[in-house]
Image (tube, rainbow, N blue to C red; front, top):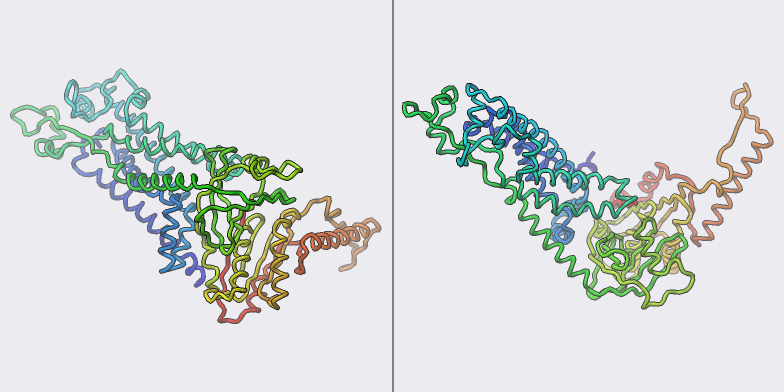
Length: 566
């Protein structure tokens, strides 16, 4: 429980504060429209008025937040500042996309409530115009402002129209439709299955946020929701005059015809700050994208993993950081994130790119991956780099014992860590407290091992030479392999009535033998492929891993876990 609070306590606190502010804004603005000024508006709309305005306030707050988690340069600045005070607080910034998604879901929720409430409001406005009975207060209120008088209450000015026409002929209606359509496209295209399979769809539809924010800023300029003006409250007190509406405006009464006005637009005050910050963020990205990047080496690994070795003037990185890569010859608009696999001590930086989609396939072909001959340097495509950006791996050297767990291509951050920690160890860097590293890598198939084998083999050889073979302990788990490689994966066993006695038929025995030979051959082949002395496990890791580590370390050792998955 103590570890959970230490690791997740700040995150939970931030989420609770965020939810608390949303709840406060909702309740506050719900009650704010129950006051005297909005009495006549509630006569027409009832509580649907408050149900429309309360989520609107929450939308302003969340739309203010939605852009901040994607200001990568701003987060990097904060991370460097906060890290001197608290590493736990700095690590929260690495959950920026998670918070971005939570805010987006909250925006979607409040948008739905806001839309449903306004659908009822428009129906109530229309009913007040259609029910033309002068003995009804709703009709009298709807008739106020007929002609040149601008102090109307009912935005539907005639009974010869319908809510649909009003929706597409007013500022609030048009911008509301644009906002809603943009939000639907953005959220649906952000689903995991679409984002991974059709990244371009996700990328392009996400830029509809420009339309979303433009519509959001202008949405309130129509001032459709109107309340009684402060001056009118002095001459028409709703508590005294609501039941005497037939005598409004007569000299012998103290009840003048009420005047109405909408609140001034407030949304721009909430979002203008984040919008300016985001514009500055994009300007920094544009500046970085125009800095020259030179591809010095391209390696095509057999497992369809492309390794790019690059140089850029003034480029500085830390372990586990990532960059965004753009290839103009493939797409001028798309930027894709890739973890750096080089160490800060090297005079170049590298990225390993798994070929899994249209963009990576096009980059693979542009670099000559589909050709047998060596690609000339001048034929290599131009690339632009934005970054690097920090991750939680930057403080790995502050712990005495480190456990690294990678799954599939998610192992890439650990390539940088393993290289850098070894450089620092052989240079006797006094700022490195790491005494032991446990590295566990889970891969689904044999091809995923190949590109990382050279690094592990090099480190293993250097550790043996310097008599430091216990510094790095690693295990590789092959969690799945092809049926053609494993031959027969099942064993049919027939049991007799005698307990604990089994009869093996001749075919079953041969199946067992083939199974054992298949596993043995697979282990030998992978060991030769990797050239490593550690064991290759053809199974899923069990729960004994953590207990083994605990037994090997003293109680005073500081153990930190890093998990990476793709």
